[in-house]
Length: 134
Image 1: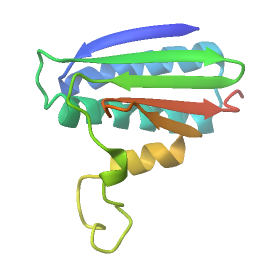
Image 2: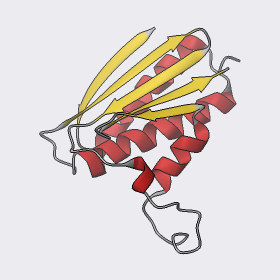
Image 3: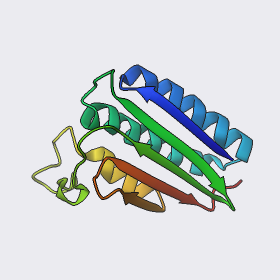
């Protein structure tokens, strides 16, 4: 199974992505525990792409690709921004950052997905979820 979605950079379009995740996970038969991890990670990645990558510019797009093969789901989110260096994002669990409102999305994604990979440019993330079937 493979699904591609393209949305313009408006937070209201997160619902389109949520519906696509719902459809894909329903067809595949994903466990409830895995569904939560997948949905939260995907929403964080797309939200980051809209707000930080594309700076909420509705003329820029976010591309989402959902693929499934052999009990492994991959979600790739790509924006049209200039990219970033994930290793430079401060750890939100350290005392000096604990009260910051930004910076939690990348942390969540990296802890919920089994594997996470950023493009060299830093404007694309691929999250892999394994052993997800009910």
